Length: 66
Image 1: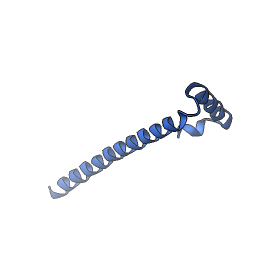
Image 2: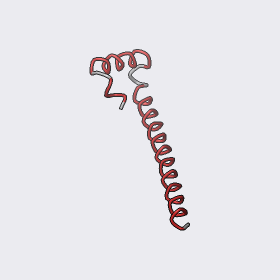
Image 3: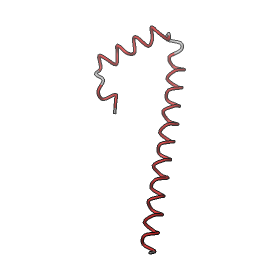
Image 4: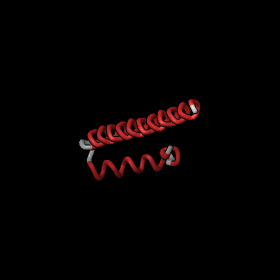
């Protein structure tokens, strides 16, 4: 994951910059929006992977029937 490449010092610096740019009152709202977006993205990509698996299963069944 990308966060594994960021050290604790860098994470603190990013947090401080975020507070300076957005302010402490806006950060929870931004975090919530980012989490919701990430969740929707993961669900969409999981749906695509499930569709690919279903297509592979259909192809295997067709090959087995022939």
